[in-house]
Structures are given as C-alpha cells and as structure tokens.
Image (cartoon, rainbow, N blue to C red):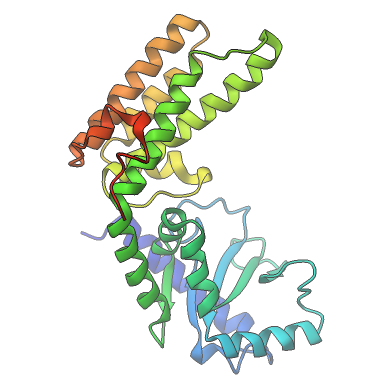
Length: 284
C-alpha cells in the first residue's frame, strides 16, 4: 500500500517537474546550471500539509563554484540583492497551478552543510521531509547520511539536554517569585518552554529529529508514538487556570514524558536526577 508520505512526495516531484519545464528551463540564467543541480521541493508542500495560499517552495543545491556563478549573474541582473538577504532566495509572484507563486532558494553544498551545523535536529527533519526530484552528484544524499550519523551519535546527549530544559521549565511554573503583574508574563514564557520541550521529547524519545516550532504539533501527532498523549497533556497544562490545576497538569505531563523516554529505551540516572545535567549527561 502506498503511504501518504509517498503520495505527497510523488505529487511534489510532479509539481517541481512542471515548474522546471515551464519557468526555469527557459530562463537563460538558470538553464546552464539545472542539469548539475539537486532539485527539491521543501516545506509543507513536500510532506502534504500545505496551505494553497502559500507559495510552492523549491530548493536547488549546486557546487560552491556554480552557486557563486549563478548568484553573481542574478545580482548583475538585479534579481537578487545580497544586502537584503544573504541567501539566494528568489520570489516568483506569478500564479503557478494552484499556488499563488513560488520561492526558489539556491544553496551551495557548503551552505547545506552549515545548516546541519546550526540546529541539527530541526535541519535534519526539514531536509528529510524534502521531496528530491534529482540529486545528480549525490550531494544531498551524502550530507543527509552524514547528518543522520551525527544525530545518532549525539542522540543520548540531545535527549538529556532537552529533558533538563523541560524539567527546569516545568518546575519553574510552580514558583514564579515575582510581583503578580510580572509573574503573568513569566508564566506565559515558562508555559511555552515547557510545552515546546515536551513536544520535542516526543520525537527524541523515538530516536528521531524534531521539526521547527511551527510543525511540532502537526508532526508529533503523525510521526511519534507518544505525540497524541503528550499533546493532550500539553493542552491541559495550557488550559489550567488555578495553581492546583497547573500543578496537577504539570505532573501528568512530566509522567508522560518520562514514560515516552522509557519506551524509547532511556533508563539513565538523569531521568530522576535531571538537575545534574550536564554532569550526568552522556558524552557525544
């Protein structure tokens, strides 16, 4: 049986093929570089969660030299201004199929590698969810393989670090030692931190990377074993009005996070002695 993800990837690659044929193949600046580019659909279109009011998001990955050549040509023709955005990001505001337009990002192989250096779990999730139409030199596949290996080696430490931040934020919910007017803002900040770390841990418990904040809830329900359970606890925490309700909801969420990590094979001392991070955290 064909999965939803496979259908989304197939549809995305078909869209990309049509866009290349109609818009980029005839373009004199892009045409010489397209045979050498890895061509991908990225963002929500690639994994079937898009809003058709949003543009079709495309990425081209070139060698460093080819990216510089194309960037210089685009700048010379005033199609890209590095002072406005260091990324080579080109908006196409003409409607295409059912989309209001497109966004084309051109990356070098080095820039792609830097993405994995900045925020590994988010970058890995993003690029793993891209729909790859072609990768002639294997640049994207090679870098994804390397990033997956790095993530696997660091997984225990990443889990420990995020669990520490979750427990710290949850504990601080119960003791906002500020005047009432300032405590409201502090409480909102700590609620957000607690919810975000809990949802990230749904992915890490399963040994997989997590998305950026915008897609945490959507993906947790679909991609993790504990996502639905943790989301229900998060929603209860966010809805709590009284201190007693907040404390109870926080305890329920903590128990579900611990259970999710234990299901993922975590049995280290830091599950209880979380305040000892990073002393108790495993090495990379």
